[in-house]
Length: 72
Image (cartoon, rainbow, N blue to C red):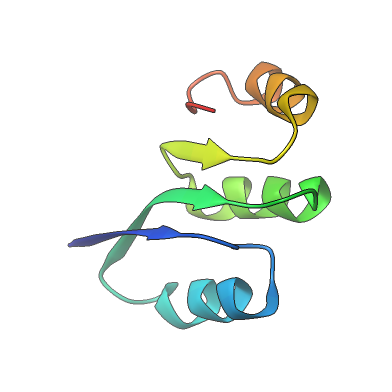
């Protein structure tokens, strides 16, 4: 299994990458986004990454409460 990180995961290219690899032998280890928190929540629920990076500290704190097993 190949492990990857997807930067800009909520943008058009990041979304396409996640769509292409979803049925392949890949583990999405980490994802990053700016401020599209609604979409990053969908991504976290879908690919279950170990690490997530977001632009704003307040968003990271909120997400950490929702996903205690993910590192922000």
